[in-house]
Amino acid sequence: MIQIIQQYRIDLLMPSSEEIFFIGRSLNKLSTYCEVFCDSFEKLNCLHNKWEFSRLASECRVQAPATFLLQSAEDLKQFEGSTAQYVFKPVYGRFAAHNLFGPDLSQLRQIQPNPSNPWIAQKYIQGEEYCSYHLAVDGNIKAHACYRPAYRMGKASGYYFQPVKDLEMEQFSSEIAKKLQFTGHLAFDFMKSPDGTLYVLECNPRTTSGLHFLSQKELVSPFLPGEEAMIRHHTAPKPKMIGYVMLLRPLYHGVNGLRRWARDFANADDVLYDRRDSRVIIYHFLSLLETVYDSFSKRVSLKDAATSNIEWDGEKI
Image (cartoon, rainbow, N blue to C red):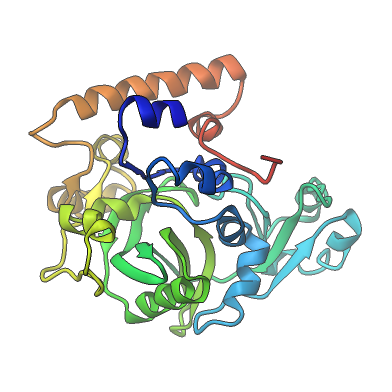
């Protein structure tokens, strides 16, 4: 990376996915060659590790659901009579890929947590899911987006994002940023229960779909001198979507919901289409072909193939 920075005279290194943990581990060395929009590995791990993050949130205005660390089969036994009340997750993971929601006993016993591969049991909160995304510098939030994943692939990642306004989520993000004096990406998943109580489920210290809601000015705001206040939208942004996925799933709400789907499709901006650069769609299609090839050649699911080269699950760096 140092060779690339020097060869191309890079001024700013802005990690986008979980390569950020490798960059964070070498932050001091890389920072001597260019500006790096990233915090230390220790802070990043505190946010990415679901157990550590639940402990951090326990001291904040928005808290995580009751969470328990699982490091052995013995730790699992206490939940055998109440599995329906919990979600079981690897401490490191993304897109709910391996999460078990209220599993039965046979599913529970397939989990094999150990100190090098710990899991958590988290109280299963039913309700409406929300997400937020932020850019922070030295503990100050510089840009913010809050949204609801209105269309999703099961319980995994969304592909249609409805913007929302929620002061409680904004205040929580500011609280975490200040507590850690954090610089970099902050993204949170929330659940709002039917009684209106807001819970924070986990944190992703990397880019997420919330990035699509940020304007060009917001994207560069962390790097402009004197830009202390968080930039706010004067008008509500339009919903964003991955258009071709929407087209593939017109019966998301069933036959009777086809009109609703058509209305939502018409009201949203496609994040992959920009008349100024038609190559985005071409390169995305090539990326999809690569994912399909990896899925077949490695005999893994498409979801696992899509993240295999951008994930970090706690292994030694």
